[in-house]
Amino acid sequence: MGRALAIDIQKYIKDLDYPATRDDVLRMAEKSGADEEMREALKSLPRVDFETPAEVSAALSAETGA
Image (cartoon, rainbow, N blue to C red; front, side, top):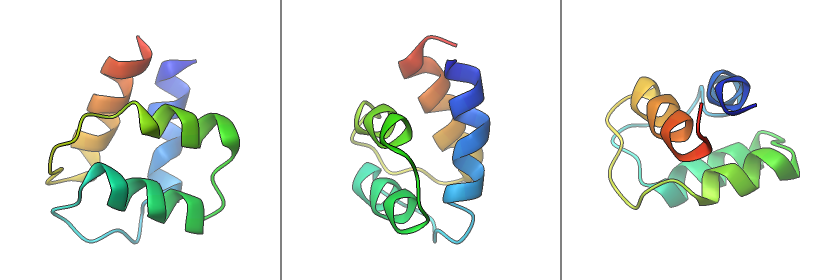
């Protein structure tokens, strides 16, 4: 399931400007219609600045055990 979330996140954050914080990622995903499962997974991301969408996916994969 973690790998699917890491891939799916890209459609929710495609309009996000970088660098972006975890809270920026979460806000954009919510604005883009992310479901509860996705929002909960994003809350587990570390509080760092992400430089690229790939960094968000990698962090999400690491946090969800994919």
